[in-house]
Every structure is written in C-alpha cells, then in structure tokens.
Length: 542
Image 1 (cartoon, rainbow, N blue to C red):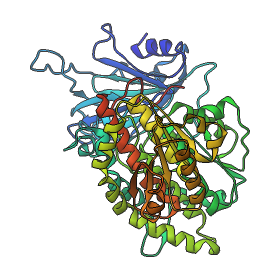
Image 2: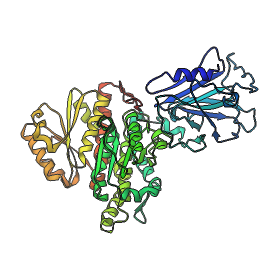
Image 3: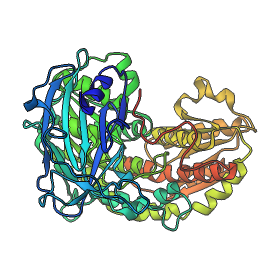
C-alpha cells in the first residue's frame, strides 16, 4: 500500500474541517497533503520554467482496488534520484520535478493555508479543492481526488478537465512588511487612502462619470430583474453590508436583506431561484459564509462573492464576483478591508442604477464624492494625535457605548467590535433610535459614551438623542462634521470633527477615528494589537 493510499484511508475517517500535511519516517522524501473545509495551497519554486500550467487530477473512491493505470505516477515506475545533501548534512528541499520543462531542474514545494506565508519564496501556487489529496515525492507531484461515502462536495466550479491550474500571485513582498510602522494594524489604517484608490481603480471612470465592475457585467441584468438581494457575511463584513444596505436599496429599488451567516444557516432560510445572494468576506475562507454559499447555490440562487483574497474558496465557488484589491491585511482586526468593502458595494449600487435616468444626478454626486474620498481619508488620519490623547482618558474604563443611527449605525457596531477585539473591554454599538427602549438606563456621569452625529437625513433625531444623553448627566464624545459642530458643541463633552461627504460614504470617514481609538487604547493597556487573544484572522471553522 502506497503512502498516498494510507493517507487517504486516514483522511476518510476524519470529521469536520481540516487541512493537513502528513509525513512519515517509513516513507522518506514524501509528503501527502489534503484539505476539507479549510484552505490549503501548494507553492512551487523551480530554477527553470515549468513544462505545464496544469496538474491533472485522478479521481477515485477510498478503499477501491486501484489498477496500476489509475495509480499516481509518483512511486510507480518513476526513476527518482536521491535528493542532494545540504551543508548541514540533512536532505535539502531541492528536488527534481516532473512538471519541469528541462526535466532535472531544482524544485521546491511550500504548503500553507494562505498565500502571504509563501510569497517571499514563490508566486506560483496550486489551490487545492475539498477532498484533493496531493502526493509529493522527490520533485514530482500528483493530485488524487477521493470520494467518501456520506460526504458530498460541490464540484460545479471545477473545470471540466478536472485539472488544477498553477496560478501566479500578484502580491508584492513589500505589502507584507511593516515598513516604518510599529504594527501591522497601524500600517493598514494609514494605507486606507491607497487601498480605497485601488478598489476604485479601473472601475470608476471619473471623467465620464460611469462605473463598471468587470466581474459582474455578465450577470448585472439578472440582478436588476431579481426578486430580492441577500447579503450574507460575518463580523466586520456584516457591518460593511449594513453600511451599504440603504444606498443599494435606494439605487436598485429591490428589497435587500442583510444576514449573519451563522444565523442564516440555523434558520434554514428559504432561498429561491430568482434571488441573488452576495457573500462578503475578507479572507474568502470564512466557514459559515462558505456554508451559506453552498446552501444557496444548491437552491439555484445566483451567488456573488465579494472578497479581498484572490484564489480563495468563495471566489472560486461563486458564480461571479468582485475582488476588493485592498492588498494583504495581516492584523486580525480588519480595517482597510472594511472601508474597501463599503466602496465596492457602493460601486455595485451605482452600477445597478446605470439604466435609470431619474437617478443620474444622484449617481454623479456619489461618483464625485468617490473621487474626493482618498484625500478626505488623509485629512481624517491627521486626527491621530487627538485620538491618542482621548485613548489615554479611557484607559481605566471597563465599558464604552457607541451610538448613532442611519448610515452610522453600522459605524457604531464596527467601532464597538474593534474596541472589543483589541482592548478586551465591554463595548456596545447602539442604534440611538432605540435609546428609550432600554439603553438609556445605562447612562450616567460615569458611563463613557461616543456618539456619531452627522448632518444628514437623521440629524434632527440624532441631535435629540444627544440631548437625552446630556439630560442624564452623560458626557458624550461626539464625532461630527464641520456643518454641525456649532450645534453639537452645546452638548458635547468633546468633539472629533471629520470632513463632510455624501451620506452613503460618510461612514468611511466616521469609522477611522474609532479604528484609531481601538488601536491606541490597546497600546495604553499593553495588549497585542496585531494578534488579540483567542482570535484568528481567518475563521475557517463554524
């Protein structure tokens, strides 16, 4: 029995999600890799050109008596040569590769769950699918796809020839370095002017005032005729869909539902063939979101992926989609991906209104604001020192409330989540319209409150909530714009003034002070900013 067959027998008995690499002293110079539910990719580094950009896949069932013609080429009649010895006396990782155009080129394989781990070594990768078993031995690679009784896998997105393409990564190694910043999160916050520009590049024509998402062009008419749109996501991605929901409804005049993926699956939500379902994820590997994608896909809905990671499972399994192009995000707490998600969703909403004459004035106003957005973000980032001083005041606090309404409700939820993630203190985002339905009981002179009051359609109601907080001896710190600062100063304990922009993009400018606050507050408390306890960047389990 070969090493691959032994590994397949083991993998067939595993339950849940996993990505494993197996080695054995009984099979030196060999490795077997397999995944189910969790991401796994293979990087290939060769001293010369590869002879092919596809790796064929053999299919079979575990425990079958495979004939010699159905076995992997590796270990069956291959004329392997021993690997060269390194200076330390150990076998080096340099081997010969079947794929090599010159036959005997030196080759290395790198196995990882994320491309950022291997980009410093190679940019050529193979993304494995669920139940793929990759067998690597002395420079040769073979991929076998197993079928296990009782476990169904969606194969509809896999190419007809069953091969796995060797893809080229576009990530630059400099994007993965901290540079002159103290932490990855700080770098990612201050990269937002560039990341937002990259999200818009090639998609927004500021000269002709038109937008186009290339990945959605073939399906946009289907979307305009759909019965409803469902945006399904988790955590920060959920907040970005909530921030864009009102504008998408305004532009499309189609009912929009925003769902948490875990709750969506718990309810076995009815999905119809004329629904369009959007799956938003920074990593593209979020387990709950991926499960809902497969659920909706099996019921005939059009599935659209919105992800930041090229080659991720969601991007491969959805019918069409959008890449954020925000660049790699290393810090666990998402910052630039959140703002890029809002911009991408805003561009989608504008695209839905391209054929509506009555909406063109509004469309042009928003496109003009998109053009101004990167420079306005730079202005907000200049508030860093002011926010740092504010964080010092909050250092000893154990709870913090963040309030707002309209477009800013999502900002409150996202700001509160960032504070929870990084500072380990209780923080709650509250819709200020619900203040008198319970949360007002929490307000006194000792409860820290941050309120977002913006000069938009909800300004009068937000101002009323501010007055209610002050009447209970609260001392609110208010994030506002220049337009309403004079009125806000009558009640606010302190103010943070951000530039004004059109209502649907104001949440991007309003959330950045909260990102900075959570960052500085975590530093004040002495916590790890980039890697908070108990959390992972990509949630690949339910």
